[in-house]
Length: 391
Image (cartoon, rainbow, N blue to C red; front, side):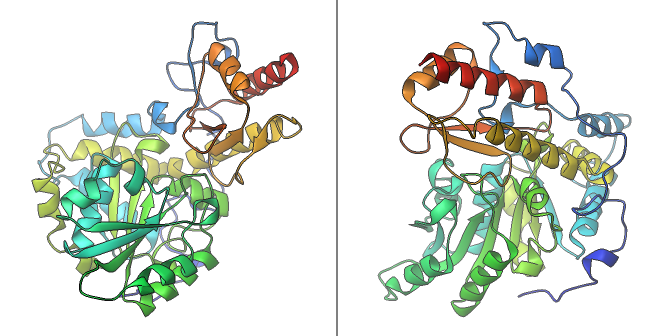
């Protein structure tokens, strides 16, 4: 079921949550984690690792920590019956401007796997990009929890599933011997740092409607996509045809914790039982929910993402003039993919830079976080320039 549009974005009620297109609190600015100062980032000695491999390496942002402390000030009810979980759930309803079902789980693999299991029977299949996290990095979790639903992978430029790719996959076979496609899974932002814009999402929804498919969004970097596109969470999800969103907090300032948001509430039937059975029902749920409330009430969910995106853009711009370093994908969120020769990669590792090399021959990935400093990025840019000059 597709929900009808509510009041326009500009006139959305309850403005306590900071949305794209509005001003963040004036006193925020660039911040450092409590374990790393700007001087440390800029002048790290030769034995100090400098982390840009993933946004999972960053610490907890002050807003999340503050609300964790608040939740710890007094005892409360268990298993999600506490006031923090109720308030965080309502805050998500404010953020998305609709009455949605909200659940909290520990990590992204559980969120994606349990959602897909709730949307599929064992004889169904899920269409996703060939680089999708559910295909490459979740250890068969979606298939396991769905009792065997098959993932059907499709290619697509810049990490995106296309309407044509969906159509081709759905119509490839329709006989009883083939797992019936039931869900399209989209990663927002994609595994290569690009995003689906509103037009692309609506086109995918049109194909999904034609073939009676549900649309699941793996929002591991959903906040970065909102920030990069400068659109509201509502516009980027249910108003564009998304049925369920797995919204990551871990990559955006939380210690742990993802929010699972069902925009079609009928699809959430018995989801809490799936969470319990899978070991995802936290007895002290308030410690998952309260940090989320900190991100939502202060606007940190968006300002954190904006800052991470800005640092990624700073890095890409800083190496744009180097002949031996090529940008592999548009920088639309907080990830930068660079093609560089192996000797240059080794030179950076020798200077204690951390990065991943899992995308293509010679491709490396740098990911910026809420607490990545301009000084750290400038230091990396300088080291890349020096390594190129020395080659």
